Image 1 (cartoon, rainbow, N blue to C red):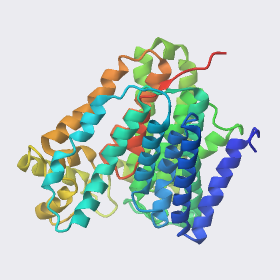
Image 2 (spheres, rainbow, N blue to C red):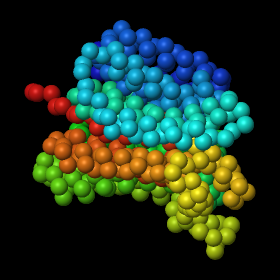
Image 3 (spheres, helix red, strand yellow):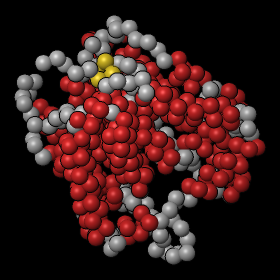
Image 4 (cartoon, one colour):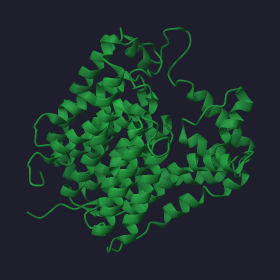
Length: 445
């Protein structure tokens, strides 16, 4: 199999079989999660990360995190974040190459520390859980950014990383199909659809399917052929779109689409190298648009037009009530109220949920990372937000390579939108944010 021209397709099939086994025994997710860590750590140490095992295995757990959560969470609910952090730190430490550490991201994570001392949970264990849950996202963003910053990766190596993320996302789409059944048999409303999400959180499932769409788009824009089978990319793209749209969680689908459009517009206006290959890019965009329209039409049809209502922000239960932001505007307003009362340090990681309960009577988890950072970290969180937004903007104008500009725009826009609807509940946004800063080096012919 090592020299097989269809090695990617074979690995894809094996990952799908792994996911199917969890249909019959969900507890296997714990065993698999430990095996992945064991194999990953062995590969990193044995090769001193010369082959990029650290980011390849980290990419795999990024893609499989939500699938494991559907099956009892693997080895802990935050497994994906902790495993990715472990891989990236280990790879960074054992490799022989010397890299410049971007101190701005060290400063970013240090800004999260002061508010920890203001957490007021009744027990140490609960405090530990809430701090871990709310700060593991910023931590993986920091580690990923430090690891990937200006790391030289050629298209062959980048293809391996893309595939490592796509394998488990594809497996999850098959898993969700068999667990949920055909869309024609489902009952839809204008609310997020847990049945179409395999019984798990639609927001997280949609986010990961959106990530799959982003990976395929990046590969096409960078002229990286993922699979030998010619139309497999199209099949996967359509599958991610249909299953993502069926969750009725809009953010996960809008994020990659907005990233693609934004990338085409900015690059067309500012980069001569991109302008030279605009024909190929326009063709890619049109192909994605046609596939997206077909997927939207199909899901809208089987849902009796409810998908269109969902995207318009209409509710089938109350025509007068807007469903555009699914209650996130209330959470945002409550976070702003908390911030105004705790401007300097915020209320501490996780404490905003409790404070929201005091304001509205409902203890809701964070959906918007920006307002969460303000409410829980105060002015320190505000500075951290400025770093997240302004650093990539400044970095963009230093880049000369069209490839590096493309991946920076696609990754950063995807992350910014994801943080606005799914916060950092998954490891994906933190990892993808760091990936934006790689240095793609084309091999000389």
